[in-house]
Image (cartoon, rainbow, N blue to C red; front, side, top):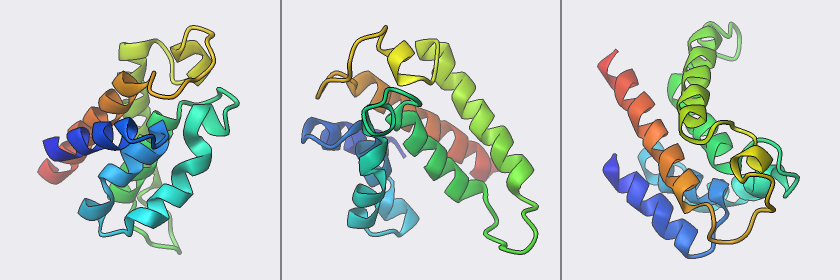
Length: 138
């Protein structure tokens, strides 16, 4: 899955938002059209629509992790507990690196700017890889 980390950084360098870069890097692996992910993730950049709330890169990581841990059963939601635990694990790992999952705090109060969040994109993709790899081992 190291390829996805590199892809995420390449997409970010092309001008994708932090969320789009992370989501699109996993599209092929998840067998989902990249354009769909690009469109879905667009509003998460800049801490959700530029509001500097939850970081877009980590939001995308949460979506990918949810995809891998949810059983997709529309009638019982039995996988939710495990999925939530993995999201909390991912949030904890991101917080260890940046002190928060909130965009404004991660950026030390600065406004989001294009090409300034490459490290956040890389770390979010690495966290996805780590947690998905653990899923495959379980």
